[in-house]
Structure formats: structure tokens, C-alpha cells
Image 1 (tube, helix red, strand yellow):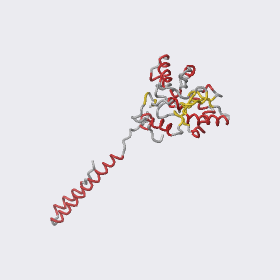
Image 2 (cartoon, rainbow, N blue to C red):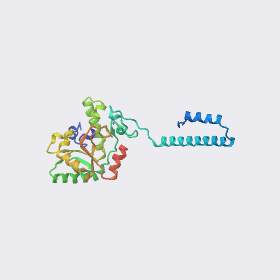
Image 3 (cartoon, one colour):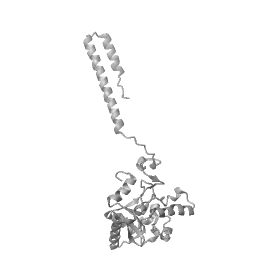
Length: 273
């Protein structure tokens, strides 16, 4: 996935080449009561004043009932949301699994601004992250290493220009339609790597799992699941994620300051996610 594509320094094509593969008030009428009333009026001579009083009570009672019914109906129309029922044969039809209509979405990827160059610092080699993310990431790598866990960096910040080559260039070379290419690479301007907060990681002891879903069997992944939140990192694309992006156990993002938090959660426009 785009977000699983490996970072490429702007001047190093080798990194780019290695990372190519990386959703009616009711009327209560009682016939028996009506018959009883009619027969009583016919067979019994009641004072006209008493009859008028009874009629008045009945009319007033009906009016009150109508007002209460209308009020309740209006109240319900404001407080009861209309929710589309999910199709048991198609779980994805549930609105709970749908993105809000106002989300800027392109082929299941969300739009992100590119990080300013002055905000990026090296985390080793040619890989860069924003300063706050870089500091926490390096502390996390050091803590993992002290526990015998070897986290390696596969991808970090990636420019929009880098993403153009990955999406359009590689897609054309492989004869992939945009919808197909988007399964493994985000369109330019729609990759979390543009933000400088996203990182793709691997396990140096089992490099064959790099950028593969079985990375979640590695010691690095298990350590990250247990400890990443301590360093303000979270998994971007867990299984059955709301974006319907393929599961990427290697792709993590920093959410440890207000800018990073707003970057990702405002993009999703999802409350409580």
C-alpha cells in the first residue's frame, strides 16, 4: 500500500526501486363505547346542561390527546436518527463501516499535506521524520534494542514527487490501472508518509517478513503492539480498518503532539476512533 511503500530519498533511486509494492396520531375509537353512548342518549332523558358538559369533556379530551400525539411524533422525528440496516450477507453495507461523506478520499486513501523540509530530521541513513516523531522513534528503537528486539527502518518521510513515481511510473510499467495500483500504493498527496509522521518498520532477524502481512508474527511486531503507545505510535491500518486499506502491520504513525493528532484524526473526521 502506498503507506506500505518504502521511503525513497529524493536523490537515491535504489530506495524507490526497493519499495514499489509497499472504503398519524392514532384515533382510539371503541365501537362498543360508541354504541353505548348512542343508546343512552336515545333511551334516557338527561338534562341538556349535563349533556353539553359531557360533550365538552369529550371534545377537550380528544384535543389534548391529539396535541400530545403530535408533540411526541415531532419529538421522535428530531431525536431518532435514520440508520441504514446492514445486510447480513454483506457486512460492509453497515454505515458503521462507511466513511463520512465529507472525507477527502481518493481510492480509499486520505489527503495529507507534505511536511516542511525544515521540520524533518534524520533518523539514520537517508530516512527522515518530523522532529517530535524522530525523537520518540529513536527512543523506541533504543528501548526495543535493550530488550533484544531489532527494529529496522524501511520507509519514513516520502515527498509528493517520490509518490508520483511510485504510483504513476511503476503503475504504468506494470500495466496496472489506478484502482489496482492503489491496492499497493497511495496516489500522490494521499500518503501518510508525506506528513513526516509515518514509518514503515521491519525485523532485522526475519527480513523475509518485511512489508508482508506475516510481519505480525515477528518479535518486533509483538513488541510494538505491547509498547508502541508508550512512545505515541499507533498502527495506521489494522485489520478491518474503516478506510478499507489492506492490513499493514508494518506501518505505524506518530500521534504524540497536537499537530500529528489533528493531521490524522481530522483527515478521518471520525469521532472516538
